[in-house]
Length: 301
Image 1 (cartoon, helix red, strand yellow):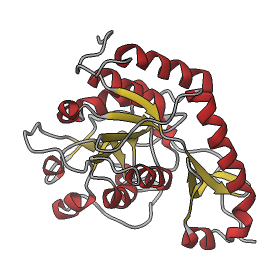
Image 2 (cartoon, helix red, strand yellow):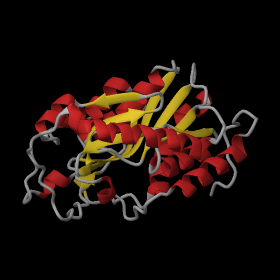
Image 3 (cartoon, rainbow, N blue to C red):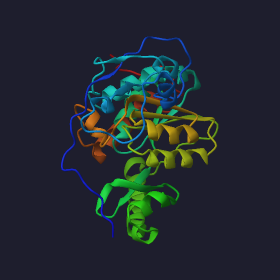
């Protein structure tokens, strides 16, 4: 069986980035690598350890802003998930009038989604999707499962890692059981939210490959929403290429060229437990409740 090389620790990324001038252009899929190719500032291929340009990060911006921008040391790491949510909420402001619903992917996506929902004054719920990791290396995603028994496996990635679908079956069963358990834990006896005809914002604190979010978007799409927006704290350009094919819009707070771990781009990346997820969901119901969101949530500073 072919193993996967694991580095003992992740280097702190360079804080070099692109300075971006304000623009009134329409929000598009943020961090568009094609715009950087046209501007001559994006290079594909592998990372060279001695080349600091490979750690360039683009702040979440409009595509037209990125083209032609010059490197600048002005962009810093995200402070925490709340900071990611604040940045994303600002870029999601045009969706306020659509009265969207925010679906956070537990656990890390819920604090980010909470901040977005709080600032847009809209409903918050969870999108129960679980990564299917490689045997012995759960962070190396080979697929995902979701509510309703949905299973997606990246067959090519699985083969390249030296595994088969049969090797993943015990992991798939375990993750499906966890999805079912979390649905009860987070919602109690409440049914999943109605998504038909609604604008849905799918939120995670970050992605490496985007497979889990992509699976979640597929689950949401089957419920016939009006539009789906993916909102991510951190995502590399190659993940955005795939997500733009499934979501109607993609908004990202920070786009590192090279990403080994999502937490690498946060100053504070504390674990989120189930109690925190439940607390945030209950708190969000305080500004929605039985009434339609009015666009303003309490407690904003």
